[in-house]
Image (cartoon, one colour):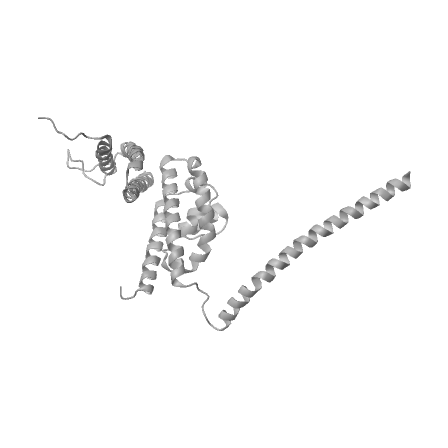
Length: 185
Length: 94
């Protein structure tokens, strides 16, 4: 009797071990594949860096991204404005979450270019530190908070100025791109 | 003598909307009151004027061209932004 129970326990242990090994194997295989797939792009960028070439994406693509970004930004500004005016963020939260998701994905591509056109204010970095534990610029500070309520609750009177700083940066960057594309026009 | 053209409700809405928008700017102290020629700040009244303008713009929106819709949205947003800025200034001063 004792022998049978012992044997069954051993068999179950082996089965569990095999399952764990399979799961771990699957995870590592997926990660390895992902790294291998991304290698050529990384290596290509590294080579361009070593040769002193820029890895920037073409001006036309920047313009296309900026145009789409500007539309979403205006939507965000409208939501923040409506929520601040109403004094509560909950009715606008779902739309905020959608716009925020998009902006969070797109902003890292735009940030290296936009930074040059952005006016800095200590309150922007401070807002990021307070809400998310890391400094932010005027643009990031507008969508760093997970909820719209947090945006309003943590406002210390800088929100409107921050919106204006972010919008002005977009305008200036857009003007700059226009100049780059058609310097004489 | 009767006029042959009737005033539809959308024309009336536009007219009223413009009145509320102007009133909001006046109560925020950006425009002089036409009756007194002086500026004054009455933020609670400005808030009501903006709320009414927002509501009327919402009713008018389905009957406007996209370009006009955006223009009204921009104007209402400007009002709200200025209201919030003014409110923030007032709190700081107090």
